[in-house]
Image 1: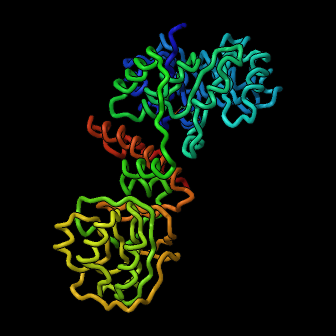
Image 2 (image 1 turned 60 degrees about the horizontal axis):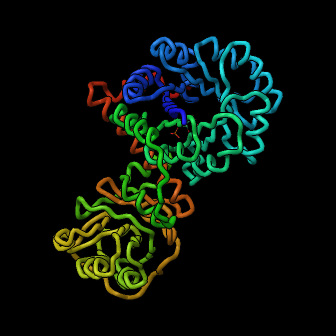
Image 3 (image 1 turned 90 degrees about the horizontal axis):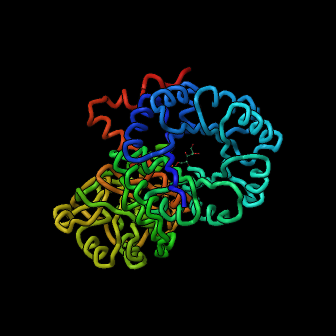
Length: 429
Ligand SMILES: O=C([C@H](O)CO)[C@H](O)[C@H](O)COP(=O)(O)O
């Protein structure tokens, strides 16, 4: 088997950063450098020209995702220095044929991107017959976030297509190795290399993995367990960033410090410090749930305290969030149990039994339904609608990864404004 090719996808917005990261990836063993679609949209063909000049001994791939005017766009990329140009596999045949003609004229190769193609096997065969040089089994970044897998797509194509197959979509060292074992000739890795603090190290890991392909046994994981694992790996700020800055409760703080809560909400609406319903809810909650209570926003009377915390901890409850006050703070802190509240006050209410359990509530400005996910840490509390939990958890992990590289560039001496090119990206009015 020929040595598999490692293509690093520069899905960045700034050319200077892309050049720096490309250099580090090449040192780690990347063979081909992909000028990613976001980079092309941000910097145009200048990105292709610059990378061509800076890396004369590497293949430059222009991820144009061509949908129309096949000939012109291939010509642009070819004349700028790309050796391989990407076209959308579901573009009309008229576009593909024109792109193939242009590719032949300018001596470049065409890679067709199967993103969102309904019947990938038949379409790949058609594309190969039309003259496309590579098929890319690609699951796009937004599709990855809802659980689609590029390895699954690749396995459907293996042995069915007469041209080399590339694979892209959320690959890391482990899945890249599996991809080669499943028949990929070109392994395309974006985020898991370019977002790493140590790009060279990350590229090297992928390089070594694809040079030693292996089939791995995967442990089955339920969606619930996957969501919990992902949320536990990120912070509340990562989660709200992943939701376009939504979902954060206002005016609530961690009472204990240093303890985090992740789990599904059991909701409680209580009235004027009445502590019967919050305490009854402990018995209804399962291990790993988070009790979320609204107390009419009142801070002069506490519906939660040390004994309730003790009981919740024994039951395996993951945390408590109260739009209202708590008491017995010193005892709760000793228990290191994650309690979040808007205030502290010594006096309790009375157990009258007013209020409801597991109905929709508003807590610190956020709607919370039973079963929604709660992620709470020192920065505060975020609520994630249950139907979006997996997607948001995946996106939050991507937010965290992106910050790793930014942190590294700040460590090397850039300002945050420089790394983010804030002035360039200010909204024009
Ligand atoms: O093509 C890509 C995507 O559509 C954004 O342009 C990526 O380059 C490709 O998915 C590889 O990146 P990762 O999925 O982050 O590995």
